[in-house]
Image (tube, rainbow, N blue to C red):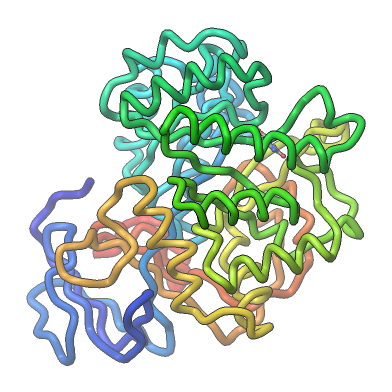
Length: 408
Ligand code: DOR
């Protein structure tokens, strides 16, 4: 967290968050929003918003930065730059690195290195089973306070007894269990059943254990119905959907886990977004080399296209308001991560994104800050793009000057 006492005034922006929509100034001092109102005086740096719209900066519940161990695909520096280029200032990192992140020391190493890069706030997940071996859960006791979420994302925990043990420990330790729902024994046979079945199983196990559950990248109608049923009976379940599962169907041939689904699934997910069942939109940013993609590696990068895909798919098509999108991309994910972000109001972190909602732009994967260029959205024309990203009152990305460093 940047803790200087310098101030930054954002002047004349059209400001939208989940509870406001109007033209106001925003004053950030010491990294925190101190005032929101008309014609605020400035004693420091200022950003003239021009025709841009100001939103709470985005918070991603699901990204793979591949650091340590697979840093030719992404590392904390390139991932941080991709994040701020997409309007994100807080990222929840998955644990399927090499080695897998299963200890307090490994988590602290990532947090320290991310902090010294200084562009974003990072939460580093630890794995549910040690080294994702599917069996061992004794490491959970010593993860320490920095870990709020555990996940074996990329896999699932196949043995229900082991998952129940982990969830019982999570309930006692106050951890949220983030589930990639997939019965790996079934995925080769019926990938829909593989997801639906494990969503039901994980919800039932979490109910028995009494732990908080977060279901990652829900992609099927059946899985979403299971989440809705759990929420209806008051279970502590949250869920995310990805931009690609909202924007694409299996008519687009692109390998990702879970796979792109049918139009019926997409329509159901969008309806769930409209009706408030979906808590967050998360990217599942999964960088791969061209060679690995050609060899069948699943996943796509998403940080630099997420807002454009969501704005184009959900708002330009009239499904939801911009205020609701900020709930899905900023407020709710920040709450799930326990961050003081996602609202533009005094005492919240001074994390903002100024977006252009008018100028169509064409995705050029070669221009990504990410090391990964694997995206099915390459060449697509979108509306909605981050122009200036501010973290703790410091400009960390500025496309108006093509300067990604502080400009104060
Ligand atoms: O497509 C995916 N890629 N899904 C996952 O769950 C893991 C991710 C990866 O790590 O590449």
